[in-house]
Amino acid sequence: SKAKQADLTGKLDKTSARIDQATANRAKLEEDIKTLQAEVAEMDQGESDATKLRQEEHADYLKASKDFKDSAAAVAKAIDVLSEYYNSAAFVQVAARQPALGGAKGDVGSTIVSVLEVAESDFTSMLAEAEADESSASTAYDKLTQENAVTKATKTGAVKAKSSEVKQLEVALGNYKENKATKIGRASCRERV
Image 1 (cartoon, helix red, strand yellow):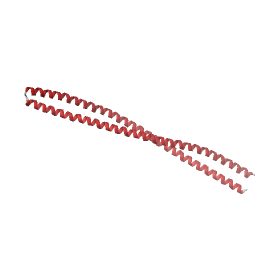
Image 2: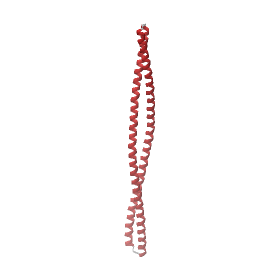
Image 3: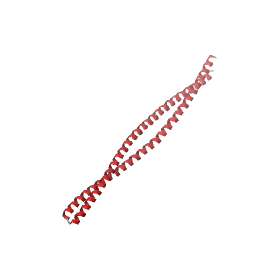
Image 4: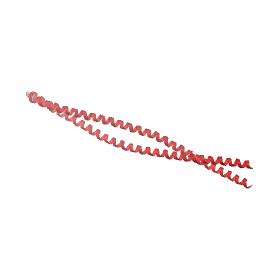
């Protein structure tokens, strides 16, 4: 019965095509999984590098911040001491009625105090700038880590889904191959008859 033989050959061809399709799909999924895993590993490495850099930046900020605060405090103390010295010296000189010498000394004193006030202002400005930079860097790092966490979760979920599909395809492949072997067995039995 050539009709039955042709029908069986058609079924075998269809099963072979399913096997080939499932094998190709499995290979594609496995390649996708490898790509996703590589992207996650690359992201992890990038985040590790960013964390190291952020820690270095923060350490630099802490050192600079302390230096700026200490410098501003030292200058402020110097201003207080010099102001007190020059003000008391000017009072003594005014009381002694020596305006010519006292005026020159007071002018030098006010010039020194003015220079120190500018220095104090500069240290305060540098501290404010360092704090703004630290805040900006911290915010950028936090944003990066949050974005990476979301992306990593998405890619990890995709890996799990594709791995599940691979397992389903392997089961289907086993069924297709078993089905094909059964059909081949039937065909060979019919040929003998």
